[in-house]
Length: 478
Ligand SMILES: Cc1ncc(COP(=O)(O)O)c(C=O)c1O
Image (cartoon, rainbow, N blue to C red; front, side, top):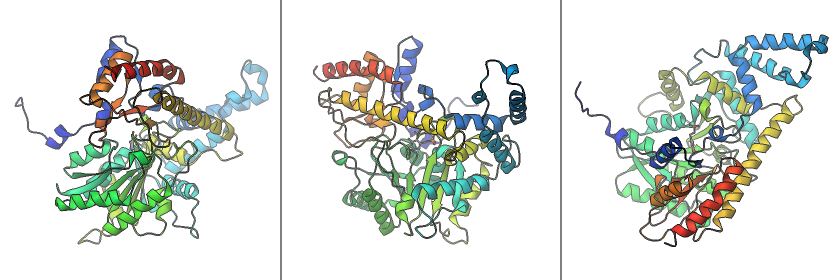
């Protein structure tokens, strides 16, 4: 075997800052015994967020079905002879609702959770996703266009959905994908990996990161002048890293723009539950009957679910069309693409089913589910607010946009000659606070930012925020 090999240069060149040099240095420091405050990644359960009991109890029963029968037997024994269960309360048994649901899931899967499923996911899960979308958007046959389970694909997280769509569209180096800057680096990295062209557009930071038609026009006309064939526009709503939540007008602007230029839309809506009281306008709802090709993505990783490690999610296609010079429908091609990987993981699919199928109002576990959900979302909102307050005490720092997603993206306005990478590395060395430099997501030239994920426990933030304020004010005054 030669010692050096030529391999795919696109992979050599791609970058992914979220797990880049700063978090790597943080990991080294941790090994050396330093206290680290990990605010660099949206990985809720790694930072102490408790899983929602409903998900885990049902999943554990689906994973180990013999426990269903055992639990039923124990419940019966308890009912007949509570004295034999000294110290055990009625509410310590798994609710019948979960036992019944686990049985129902197993029977609908038709096999153990260890089996492959239909490539794009079983029909009952795709139907449940479609019902969820229609309920979320308040849509039925009369008021809009209901979601179609036949155009639904279960995925290993939203990342896989993004890769699948881009893989379908990028056929040559001049194929272009419009992405917002700053963006979640999955997009820049995947475009690079597939050998396409990244086309930047810039939401207006000073105007709470809103999208304007004139900026979209500027971006596409520049790309076209350079010979780029722009095929898709990506919108992340709520935004990562900006945390911005789009208003209905911005969503409409993108749809009208895409229609005029014959672009497909990727609507990355993985943070749709993280709007902290603001309304969420899905692309599917605002699109209505407009004939624009739309890919909507959602995931079990974020929201209040935080189940990143389970790798579940879905992609919905609207307004599919025939592939050029063939009779093939694009939606069917996605089935073929999924079938090459056999299927997405069945545990993640089951969790996606639970995500879109929460306990019904009035059911036994409903109260606990709603309480756990509220606690996580309230807590996140409070931590974001605390952090935003701290920014007010940092010289020159400005933070635009209403709070959404799991991130804040303050503009640092650093003195000339200091990059945001220098700042974040020095901040890490001085305080143990691990963040990601704005340049890792892309940013308007001449500006400096960092991304702060407001996930660690409140007590951690109470400890590190004053340290950060002190570091910042000294660092920028040197
Ligand atoms: C905007 C955005 N899209 C997609 C993803 C990928 O999520 P998943 O875990 O569902 O693959 C992330 C993860 O952080 C994200 O922030």
